[in-house]
Picture 1 (cartoon, rainbow, N blue to C red):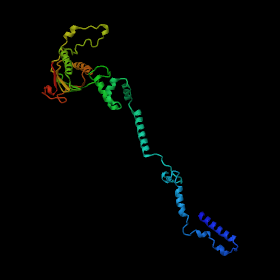
Picture 2: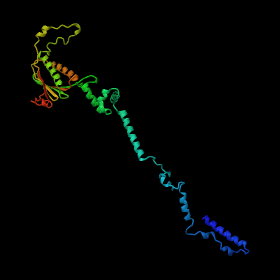
Picture 3: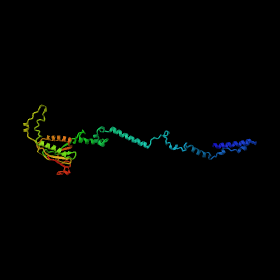
Picture 4: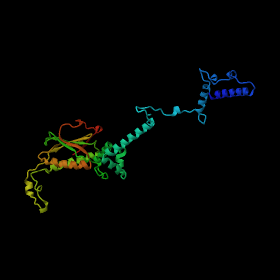
Length: 323
């Protein structure tokens, strides 16, 4: 627009100079032919608009010749109720996922630190300096339930002292009576597993020794002269009184039989006193804890477990001890 106006003014000035330099007088008619400013500006469309658009486009290019992408790179903002643009969260989906993973790991570590059993922590610390305990726990470290099972199994078979060579069980066996008749009933023994030949000999030897003592009248409560005496004052034993007491002895006993993890022996205790049962249980308690693990002892009963009458074949797990 300014260029057109300057061009019009320059033309008018040149025309006026030519007229003024001549001898002719100036008149309004001569000036009527001078171009006017309004004559160069159309009323419908301005001519400078064709020039402004390319100039604006060139101005929007940066110094590297690239088109400015501010409209595309600037993050979109939305105006809130206050009229100010709201700021974005500034995080990406990957960042939020990583934040969630870290938070879950922190919760697991916190739960493990505050809810982990103290005894399990003690075992884990002891494994650092005890190779045998580390071998017992194996891959159960970090799992309290599995650690408990492994330790209980080891304690059951070896006792609380891991260095002590034990093959029995420290768990006390259960004792029950089922219509027990001292004059003729079975005594059942449930083991933790099928007995080996050594186990059969151990348990059979205990039963045999118990029967021999009962057969010789050892379990006679009528002659317990030293039971309530003190050894500090040299007690006196009356042999004549002991010889005059009516003897009480076992009458009969069967061989000790085994089928799988069950064993039994039939016994007729005759006139022996019932404290002979206490003597047997005392012997079995030490046998179970030191050498042979026993789950339970049952006095009486006709059939226990999967016992099959008449099955005497070693191929089916039958074993026996001859008394």
